[in-house]
Every structure is written in C-alpha cells, then in structure tokens.
Length: 290
Image (cartoon, one colour):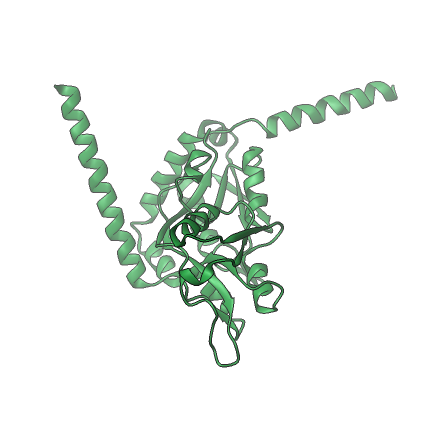
C-alpha cells in the first residue's frame, strides 16, 4: 500500500509539473480566469512602504485587471532574472516590469506595446565636493560595470565598448535588484553599476553620494515581457493597454511616475507608430487588391 501510494503521489506531482510547464496563451488563461504575473521590487514597479503598495507597473496592472475581467495573481520576486526564469518555465504568463526592448531580447521574448520612455545610466559615487570620476562614456575604458543578471543592457555596453575602441568589463549580479545594486555602489562595495534613469532618480534620493548623470543608452521604449508562445495574450494585453492609455486615470498615473513632457512625448510616438502601422496596412491592402 505504501509503495502504491508513493507511485500515485509521484504521478500526481508529475502531472502538476507538466501542467505548470505547459505553454499558455490567452484561450487557456481565459478558460482558467487567472493571469499569473511576475513582478519584482523596485520603486517604479512594486514598492512597499508601511502597509501601502504602489508602483507604476503595479497600479497599471490593477487597471488591466478591471479592464480584462481576469484575476491577476501577482508573484513577487526579488530580481528580474528570477521573473525571467519563471516565465521561461511557463509558471508566469507575463513579467510586469519596465524592460527595455532591444534587438537581442526580441529574439527570445515578445513585448507589449511601449509603456514608458527611459534610458540606462551609470551609477557612481561622488566625492565630498560632489565630483565624479566618469564624466563621459569615453572614460569607461577598463572599468567594470555591474548589471542585473539577464537584464537586457549587456549588448548596449558591449556595443559601447566597440564605439570607444576599448574594453569595458561586465559583471552580472545574481540575486540583486536595482535597489541593492545602487546600495553596493553607495557603500563602496563596487564602483559602477548600470540601471534605468527613473529608478536611479528615486533610489538616489536616499543617498547623498550617488550620481547618475552619465547616460549609457539613448532613450528606449520600456515594456512588459511575455513568452514567445503567447502571441494572442500579447495582442489582448495591447488592446487593454490601448484602451487604458486613453483615460485620464492613466495620464495621472504616468505623470506621477514620470512627468508631463515624457507623457506628451510618448503620446506623439504612439500617434506616429499608429500612423505608420495604418500606412503599412493600406499599402499591403492595395497590393493584395492588385
């Protein structure tokens, strides 16, 4: 009896694991009524202070939940790489953290429509007079830049090394988030790190010796991440986001975490992208008719 019970237990566990690791797209998610979302601690995505929770991504998810009719089951991770691992395993359907869209990452994942504009910046210490060692990207030769593990900024740094014609060392920090990465710089454990500008500005307010004025990238689109086997989910997410972005509630949310100029710039880009897509569809339709 014990042997039979053990075999049945193993079989049930195996079935559950296979179910959890099965690719899910919107039809399977809608049937279950639950969207599993990975998110990690950062001032911009998910931030706790006392009993309150805020964050641009967290609050935007609440709007998506009301719009979609799905129950959003939030899974809190400590860093980006853990979220990505669970997405790869099909445990999560979506990573709701501001992630830069790069040519390299689009080979492995699909992204929602752009949700914000941001850029990657260098985190370094200042001296007692407020001066810094690195004033320009050219000064980075021979330096070691610490980044979050699997965060899509490595390729940009490698390209920058080619641009300046010198070596820039890269160290991917496992089990770290943006907050802990900046703390390592502030406390002198490491000298340089790279993260996005908006998070850097929020976190740097807690330290009097952190500078983030040196840009590592141009302004980038930031989006949510999904598994490449979930294209219908991506279309559904984009449809809900498009509806949400036309509301006054969304405008208030965006300007609270970014600013009015950034919101207006995003709207101009959205309009341009929409026009380009419409023109492409028109041209394609004309060709088909011919």
